[in-house]
Image (cartoon, rainbow, N blue to C red; front, side, top):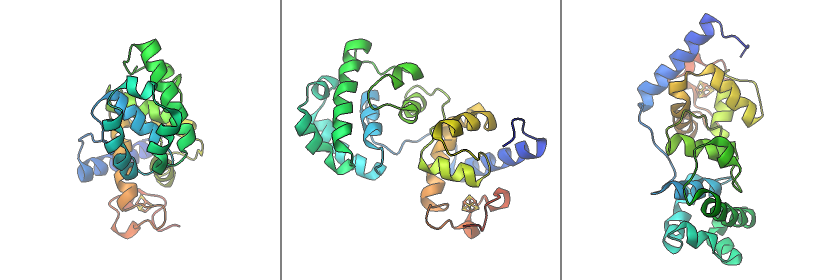
Length: 217
Ligand code: SF4
């Protein structure tokens, strides 16, 4: 979208958000299972290039085997690799989880920080993971740009950018702050059910009236 939104563009954005709220409610939800902030951090690191459903299967046993940050920080690299193997990219993820939990204990006293710079200083934590933590744990307005948000924001004409960080900053400009967290939750739901990557079901989409990509491949 242009630097300054026209009145018409703003009305269209508001209409999309209003329809999303109506369809999916304004209740916050997280698709990853966790009980503590550090568990969500680890689950989010594991979710890179992996489905949330698979991460949830893996973490069910993982969090029993490693019940504390200390347990992860002192884990055997080879053993942790095997424990998280089904999530893919397990070598890097295991290395990052050990380094991340060690730093959390050494520098932050075991408390997951809410500052974006501090979060992204942890191994394996990029802006996406940091924003998941900020939104879900600290309820700080944050926009998580995952594969669904990237694809559907472009389809809706909210951005033309390709780079997740640029998309995040553009969405910050386009969306009102009170919808930054909700937008991700709603768009994941839409992307899994209606606006799927393979074949968007535009005919049955409740946003078709407002979507410039309706009916396009
Ligand atoms: S109208 Fe089609 S392209 Fe647009 S959001 Fe709905 S399913 Fe996706």
